[in-house]
Length: 480
Image (cartoon, rainbow, N blue to C red; front, side, top):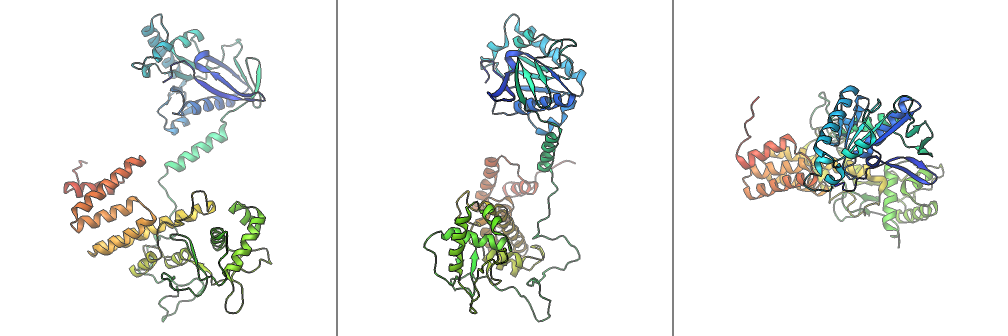
């Protein structure tokens, strides 16, 4: 708790260092702003700082000009409907605290654990002059930032680029309108339930089910069931270099000698080139966060490791055009999986989904250390989400046919890539419940609920209903 009576906020910075003010010590900070937008920026800056729950405890009261602060969903911030309401609230607050204190001060009560919470500092941000004196505000533990009375000097003089506090000039740190809009847009995005449709899922009602995927650029033919070559999933040597990413990273089928050093970096370079065809050396250096000399050395190692095809064409040609590209026969399991599900996970047949899951050997990039492959985070996230959706889709189809063992296998494979995923665990729980495996169903119920508590997230409605059906035999009644 705040026992000593300090409530610092940052106003700006000067060559001598940061410029802070202790609101509890001053009680009243009067601000003369050159134009109203500057005062709005100061109030926003102060409120955002005080909303940080890791800082000293304090409550913040603002007027409707700061209504956007309610979007922060901070329990410390309360927005009044208008300025008059805020002024009346301040008056009542001071009167109530003053009557309870008698001749004492709030600082002593903040040191008492029994009542400290009730006497937390309250900061009121006014756009009109404050009618309560600074000494009384300090005594009752209330802080006010407001314009000065007409004709009175201000404690803080605020211009766009310069400010002055107690004779000290500094650069103010304000949260102006563009930054406030940016914060609101971020909060809108975080709260939105409108998500971009995944590329591996289709909602086109005109497409038939069980679409057969063809290699891009080929025309369909009646005799051609599929043009997708199977990914190497055994220990046999593939006909061309093949990079496995859906599990521990592994380069198969290279025709040259394995490098004595930087093997992992060579594999990462190969993945980057596959995901960024026709990329430039400058972009590669920038995204891989390496020096150009390091990139050149590792590219030479990778070129020698990959080797050449039967016609002597290198699998990693020299980039004479300035664009780096691999031989067309070089591919990866992630590339093959994407090709398989091009029509949509929910449109291809069960055999296609099963083939896709045979490529999964664990978590994508399983042996990459945290911080490595930083450029590939979006790719890794797409891998996990795609595998999850394949596991759920195939598992639900198999459950609908009563094939419980098959559903378990599909979900189990996907869980290796997306551990504790609620959709997968829900499908697996349904499989164990329908199969009559009560002990395993109860274990999964514990796993699901504990994972939700550990992450502080709410379970989805469908999951809650399933848990009720598993543990209580039916969904709990709900009145309309």
